[in-house]
Length: 281
Image (cartoon, rainbow, N blue to C red; front, side, top):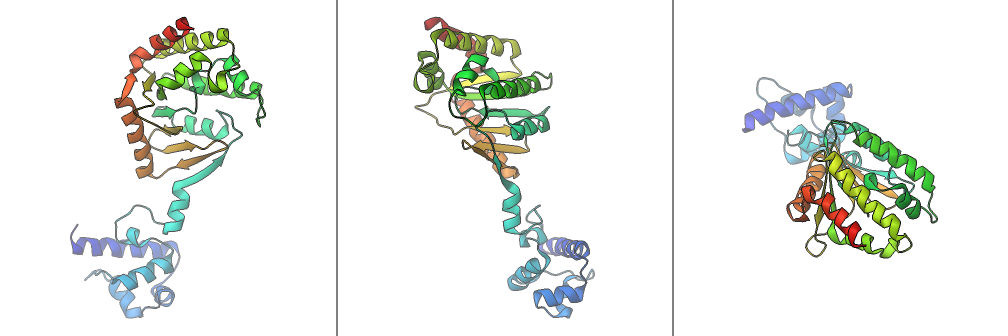
């Protein structure tokens, strides 16, 4: 974009901002501490011009918009603090895999690709026995509520238009099979059942539901979910950080795709791998 085109775009956006705030040229001149003649020159259709840096900052502040938006460098109209507030939101959760925030994001992403890195095992693949064990301690929701919520998520993912990819470390699944860490109190039978159900579910829903297992020695990831191109939610434990800025969502998507590229067990092998782990217990 050459200087004249940018000046024309600036004039159009300046006019739009004045209209939306029901301000006239005199109002802007007072608010930005500029001469009215300067404002008139900036709004002139015959010879559009760009303001200097100081005038641009004053105009943006007076109108409550970003200077980048006025210059056509950004699609976000709001000031920097407002843009950040819109792009990153905090969603409280009751330490439950499927709460109202997640279900709303899943519904909003129906028909779009969902990329998911779980905190432990994928919630949508967990058996009721595993959920009951996981939520048997001091949590804000009961095991029964966790089971019901996961059923709701599973119902959403059973739709024909669903496309979901999951990445999990191979070591995390092997540790589950051995009953290590948080799974130490889970019986052998429950662990075998979980791995067999996982294998069967992956085979039944492939390729709309795919699991990739990456190596923990080679790659690491915090738990997060990308809902199409609209949202990315980073799970912190008792809350989510939800990102709606396109660049942030793309960053999470690229990180996920990197995990897929470096997977040790590919999606078409994951179901059989889980069932082989069950046989090894």
